[in-house]
Length: 212
Image 1 (spheres, helix red, strand yellow):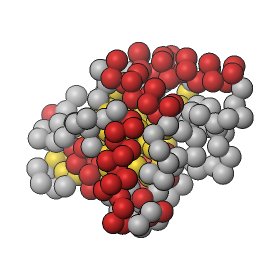
Image 2 (cartoon, helix red, strand yellow):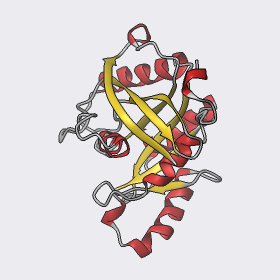
Image 3 (spheres, rainbow, N blue to C red):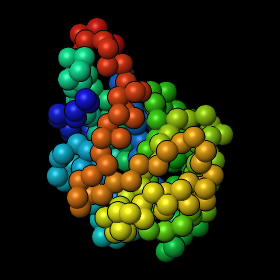
């Protein structure tokens, strides 16, 4: 099993020249404002307050980079990866100029971050497929960027309704073979599927001393 054993905030940035230098695999979190990106990062790293949460949707306007040390107990290996918390999108009170700034920021990140291994797209399980989430998924497919989808706030609907809700959500998002992982930050459930997804995209067979 993959474990994330130590995590640090590295820096915030906007332009590619300000991104932190890194030779490690990187995974980014993206979703609508207030969907719970920062909360999920704190949850899977088990570090309270690592990613700053805000009660004001759309407040985060920067790319926030985190360095994470992992261990794979099965292979008895360890290494490092990076997480990036991308600014949330879709907040109604953000101006057109701010939306364009967000688009350019994310485009530059996708174009320039060669170590990017995948995107974790967050959606709210309580709501039907959103047009902006669909556009984000289409962008990732067009760029051939690997991704998974996490449905947050799974504790907000009855457990026996989750499977059907995920099917409807997957259809609305245009997903075929891509599963949706239901996660509850309140109950701390659903994390194993994310760890497995990350592990499958890391070189967990190689001892840390042999990794570049």
